[in-house]
Length: 395
Ligand SMILES: [Zn+2]
Image (cartoon, rainbow, N blue to C red; front, side):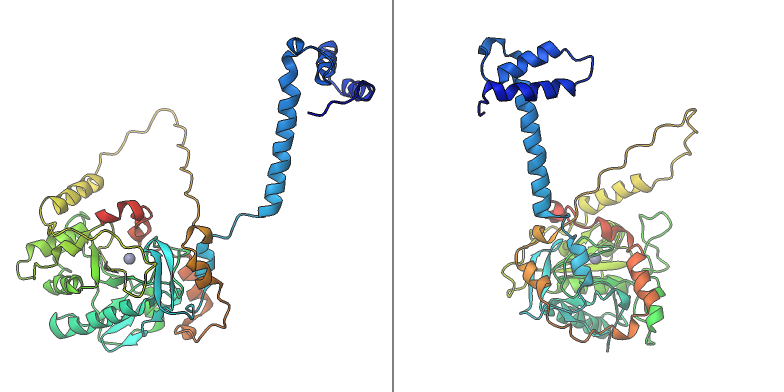
């Protein structure tokens, strides 16, 4: 602290005194100010810390303001940036980062109509993936039709043109290696764009929500899911525990890749195929490989018991005599920003080259686009690996 000469300190002191409320002990204040000028013995300076603290707090405010001026408003959430990208990044194809925290360069769109598939929900523009995943989906569609009695695939969400977090739905599907395939077989006729928006997928569950509905579940369902798991590049196929159990119990199905068919929340109207990191993507973060256990015993049974407890009907609760205070809403986890994603994603999203032709150019009716933005995504996909980096091995 710089010492002020006494004659300069006095006018300041008088001014300060004039500004103090009447009840303030002026003599004490004045004394301490005098000490603060450095003329009094240290022993008498009990309140010395106060002005120092004040000065410190002042400095803090100034620093905070300066910081705010420097950093500006909070960064735009990455889902806004990636959700706005209409075309892929014109770079070599590669998956960057983790399934639930990353992006995708050089994405390829699956054809909206293939010989043995049709893409649903075109307005979402989520038919983009790593080229290896697109080939894999096409292969599954062809193999399923040829061998499994599966008429063709209805393809749900894959990824956005540049991957990344989405404005609605999925926590994963960010690096172009996840694909949702409906458990409704493709109809013979070509669906209209409107039907692709409005048609609902069929749930495989009975009313109890923990067992399969034999009215809708067929052996062909088991075959197409098992086939997806049989491909070497596929690391996981996520399905509802009731579906996993039905597959375990169908002895006519091949049992070699049951370990890759993983029980998970939701996934009763679609299967979620997850590919391993491709060789061309060194910045892709792999998930732990699933073990060799088929998961047909304790694992799937534990899942089902857990779900039974959750969905068991409960007796109605008596009205509490006094209105209880509402519990405070949990604070939302912070939004993923570009800074949270792998550094390469800046390049993926920052590219400003003119967008290429979009395969959905013919379906951008304003209402369709709006419904895609506001329609809540298919339930439990939302709960997907937000915690995946940690809990990934369980999936
Ligand atoms: Zn999915």
